[in-house]
Amino acid sequence: MYVAFEGIDTAGKSTQIALLKDKMPDALLTREPGGTPLGEKIRAILLESGGASARSEALLFLADRAEHTERVIRPNLQKTILSDRSFLSGIAYAHVHEKLPVDVLLQLNRFATDNLLPDRIVLLKIDESTLRSRLDQKSHDAIERRGIDYMMAVQRCMEELLDLLGIDHIVVDAAEPPSAIAETIYNYLKEGLTNA
Image 1 (cartoon, one colour):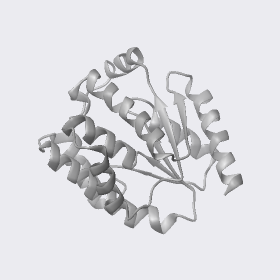
Image 2: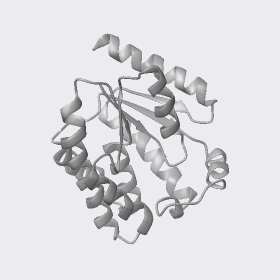
Image 3: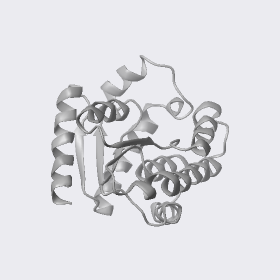
Image 4: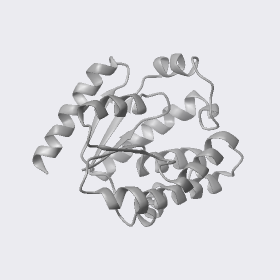
């Protein structure tokens, strides 16, 4: 089962994946951008420099996604895969940043993944005040420097995409205690494994 964890920056995706690893020790953990040697180089370009044009940025994310799908996701479909981000982030961030049409972005992402999309998506939804508080406690990468309004618009886009695409998903309040969130997600994923 291929599970993607989605949400804007500071929503707690990495924390939840780490907590679930304790309950699902055989799961494969990965991330986008990154997850492969090429992906880590692309990640550094995207998050540290922030100098790419909007369309170049979208294409770099797509290159990472194509490599990640071919080298990590597809060869391990017999396992439980917990991925920090997926195509959903790619579409939402690019749509809000560049105003590219969602149907074009979806087509590009289907090409990059050869139509391999997650079986289930966990969306960690964060409210604006919690987002502000969490951002105040850390240094910001190139994406986070675009501001609160940008990030909240990305989150709204993610929710709209989930409704549009019909992929099995759960939306979880990211302000809840991490242990409670992990239990909710684990029960959701157990159900998926039972029905697989």
